Length: 371
Image 1 (cartoon, one colour):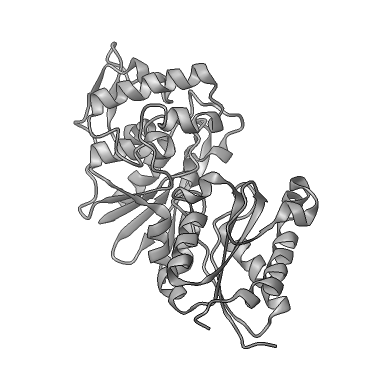
Image 2 (cartoon, helix red, strand yellow; image 1 turned 120 degrees about the vertical axis):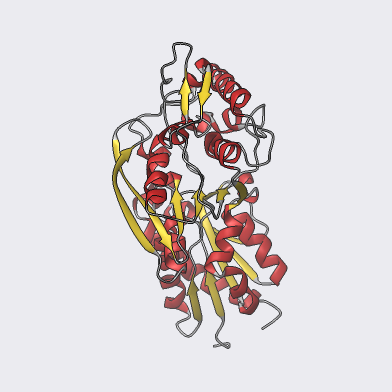
């Protein structure tokens, strides 16, 4: 057998199936079945969406999970809320955890809300955090973050002076905003982890691009666009900023009202988890996600890991539930291994382990020139 290799396994979650930590562990078991003497590091990643709390908790010593209790889910039903406290009184909140698309019983593009996110943030502020990171991605709604801002005391009022209803459609009836009860951001500032670079409005904006994923037809997209446009007229800020359309425009809402910074979620997680440093002494890196397609290279975990591996001259492999685009490197589809996407989803751990074995058989012969 050739000399032991150093292998980093750094996938995103397989949304709707397994979290990134479980995905990475299964791939690692498969790799070690074939090459038990290799040095394997499991480093689950995220881009601000689903799995962000888990990835940071696994990477940061002394991170503490804080349970909030029930908060308002995206369809109004209660759902558990939680956030992560990091050393230095920093807080991390994940929108997908409390306001994510999978929490809906039925898609509700016009009425879904981010109110629960604001309730979790309020809890973190009440606990005394001095800085805040908000992971954006996987949103059920297109409300510009209005629900979350309302939960933090921003009064969104109609012509009658009463608060408007939750949801993106109601924003079109917004008459004025009362900021007198709005919470101040923590003194150390707020960072928004975005997984897209889209603006708030227009044909590349939050409603047009991501509304269909949330159940919006053409008429609903027009309604949501009108609502977001009205919201932007009254809130101000820069709706054209790259990333402001993230999470149904929630990035815009917090950037405009709290002067929050929008950053690439995948790149921030790479720093927090130590992936950048790890690839300086790695032979092979495996990454993956539920579906690899043309959007994977635009701010997603897999695209950023690919770019990082190329910079470090590290041999790369991609394991995905489905390969809807052909990667320019070694790739493996669980759907192909299982015979269908349905079969892969039914037993993802088994097929991830098999993918790990396939990678171990094929990738080391291509290992980095550094070795």
